[in-house]
Image 1 (cartoon, each protein chain N blue to C red):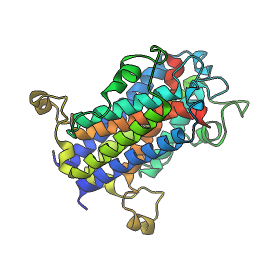
Image 2: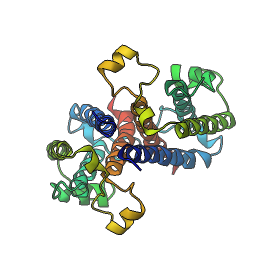
Image 3: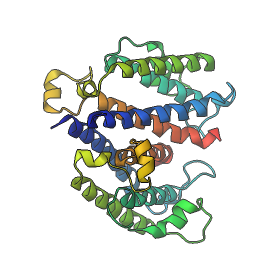
Image 4: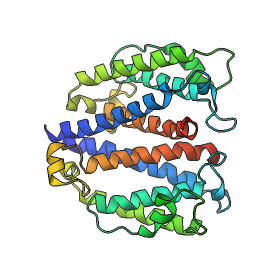
Length: 160
Length: 160
């Protein structure tokens, strides 16, 4: 392995470890348990799960892996706060979409060589990328791994 | 910049961004506010701040940057849960130590070239590292960045 490949392997391993943690935290909960709030008057677990799914889904076009699979998750889980809408996807729909999105991301990851991660992500222009070459795919992967950890810290408050 | 240097720059930027977030979250709180719990019967903010300081302090020997600066933080913030001990360091002591530890880490980071991050960290043996070359300094940096995010997600529940 080259040094850049080692860098990538460590980074991908951190992503996978956090996805596994999330799987473990969410999969064992019943639909009723998923309606629990992480703290009084804060987001419910189901909302965080849907929110993470929507954010991961949005990584697909950002990384150049194609269209989003579940743009309909934005309204209930991204543009609106929890409990703002009368209806939201069921626990079963969230679970299925979560799996589907993360699988499609892994398929995309498998197609990229280490150097490809240093190319610009799709939300930055050529001009801006020339000024700041750190606005690359790798930066998306790291920030989304951190975002996942951030919410896992919240999930841990109830999931025990 | 070489590709491995770009990898490192993105990774260090994620660390720094999260340290800045923590600074912002903790620095504006009064000693009284730091005694708030993140959720009923959960850790207090001051405990999380001390805990993060202890974990970052332990990175110094792990990354080969020398002795720990505050091993006395382990008992109140690592080996024991919150509220288990009658006395703990004051908010002012935590703030000072947090700054000191993170500054020393940055000094250490500045001394490492990209390839140095791929060397083993000090808690893994030569034999184990030969079997799994991903147990390197970089893995420590990524896991501690994620650990910081994890607790920042909890701090956000009260710090607003």
